[in-house]
Image (cartoon, rainbow, N blue to C red; front, side, top):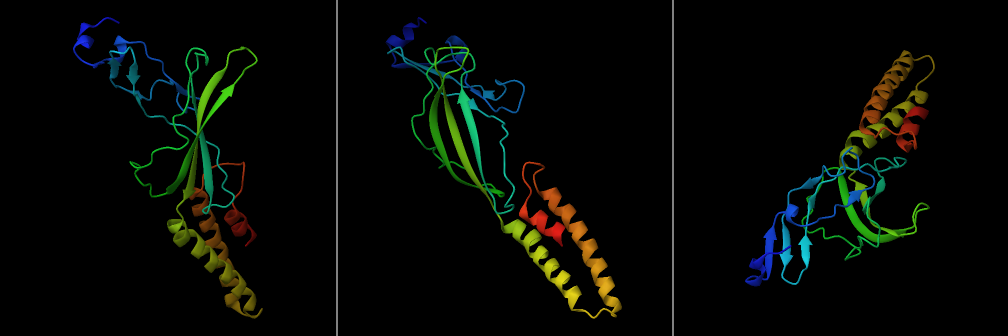
Amino acid sequence: MEDYRLLESSHLICEPMAVKTVKSALYSLDVDDYTSGYMPSLVMVYNSSRVFWGPVIRFRSSCQIDITFFPFDTQVCKLKMGSWAYTGLQVNVWNSSHTMDLSNLVDNGEWELLGVAVKRNVVFYNCCKEPFPDVTFSIQLRRRTKYYFMNIIIPCIILSFLCLGGFLLPPESGEKITLGLSVLLTITVFMLMVADKMPQTSESISVISELLSSN
């Protein structure tokens, strides 16, 4: 690239198409086109032949979760970034820090971000002798429980006491059958509501679902 404006200035800002750029990919991307998350951004070229390109990327990914202790669960979602086409000898991927800057993070009403660990890995595949480096982001999330505690946990405790209260009524009491049927219908409706709030997965069963089923 020849541009005489670099003789008068220490750097030059230009479009990405003016220089050769390499796009990394998220291995667990949840879309068909791995370049769909890239947003337009400029390239900064210095007169020392150094080129800086800070692309703005928005990715959508999926990760495996464990809902055993729902809604008091903590999840770890791993995002693996690397190059699909280039080897480590052509494009070297590394992390400048073992953590992420979370100062501009916007709080979420459902999840609390506990931390993000960043680690560089080098993988050798059977097809090639060249190394393939990647950077893995381990995102640790904890579910906020106030909403679920008020709308699921407390009603579940009340239903458990109502089930026990049915055994305290005398057998000849007609209200015993009425109470049992009412509690059964309430538990059925409550299980539908809990199932609607939980993620749909068959890899694990939540303790609260087992508790409602046992009632």
